[in-house]
Image (cartoon, rainbow, N blue to C red; front, top):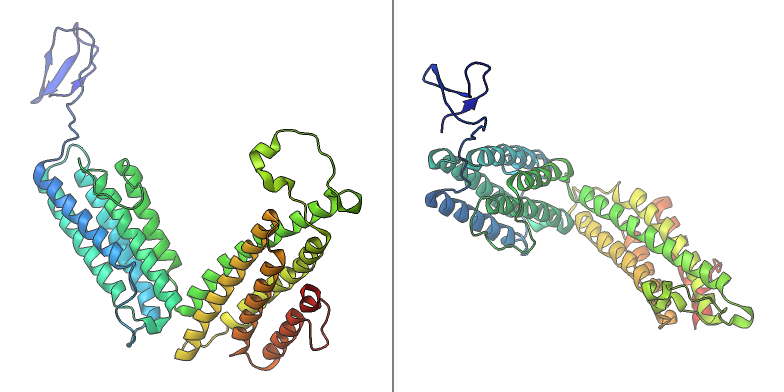
Length: 389
């Protein structure tokens, strides 16, 4: 349809076409171009094939790496992935390529789309996705489990976002784990975000990967410690004489908070929790020291140090989980003593892992921490084991 333009001449709107204006005797109603959202069957088939391929690649990256060891330059990879990421919407050089390809595909496929415009962009994005998946699959485990896992997750997110982009144009979308079908501009934005994450967050080595994971873990630990402290304060101030629960006016909050809002620990359980708060604070300081004295100074040119960093990451995550478990046991008033024992064992294991490669004053500091955790060696500030036996 020809585009109707307004005019102040004549009795009606005029239509511009072939270099002349034709007066049209009609009401002052403007017509708009017919815009179809349908994409031809051939383009639909190509988009589906691309979505299936990206989804399969993302699922393969969820499996353990197939290459155990080999020469691999992680620093070079850090800057290659970002550019490839742009192409495919991922980190590094690859990320740059991903983003560019995704943008071109969006422009070519948005209504009204033509097969001649959409076909080449679909093929190009498919090539980039193939390169990305192959590149990530080539990273050996010897680079560090934390590092490899970070790379594979980031690439997998970008590939799933590419599936979501394809789905926004497909009449019958490809099923993916999460609900990622949406309007194409939103899907393009998701892919851009995945690529930017790959560009900015791709670690240079296992040291950077473990450090990033450690900072997230310590944030979780901080939240857990704060929750336990708040609960203990409520227990100390909310009980009447002889430890009996004060009568509280029904205000309806129990229906929202559940029965845990009524929990009252025994004197013995509360005493253990008070001691645990002190222990948690010590553990919080321990985690900060591990980051500064072990992780950030690690020599990743040594394979044994790379493996040690992975152990630290796993031990730190276990500590954060143990704090959460202890908090849950307090709210349920179940096995507080058992959870306290478990936490001490897990926190002590973290100290042992840190000690295995610590030297000089660092080794001495961790030995002091171990003594405090165990309540021995003259550092009986907590006397934790004697208290809960």
